[in-house]
Length: 151
Image (tube, rainbow, N blue to C red; front, side):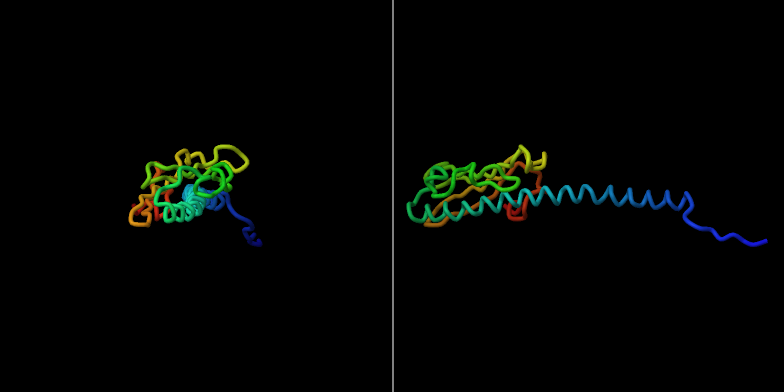
C-alpha cells in the first residue's frame, strides 16, 4: 500500500494564520490612524508657521501685532488652506501679543479626522523686537508635534 502525501494546509493551520493576521491588524490599524492624525496636525502647524514669518516681520517693523491676516500682509484666512486645514487666522490679543489659529476641515473632499475638532493655536508674545511663540491646543497630546508638547 502506498502512503499518500499530505497536500495543502489543514484547517487548524489556516485558523492559526488568520488569528495571527487578526492580532497584527489589531495593533497596526490604531497605530496607523494615530500616524495619519499626527500628519494632519503637522500640516496645520506648517501652514501656521508660514503666517508666523509675516507676523514677525510686521511686529519688527511696527512694534505691534497685526490685527488680522490682511494687516499682516498674508492671504485671507479661508484662502490659506491645505488638504486638511480649512483656514489660518491671525488675530491680535493686544499690541504685544496675538494668535495664529489653524482650523481643521470638517467637510469633504479633504475632511480631517473626526478627532481633530479643536484648532491648533500659536500664541506670540512680543518684546524687545522679537516674538516668543508657544503652541497650544486642546487636542490629545499624542497627536501634537513635539514642538507643541514641549511648551
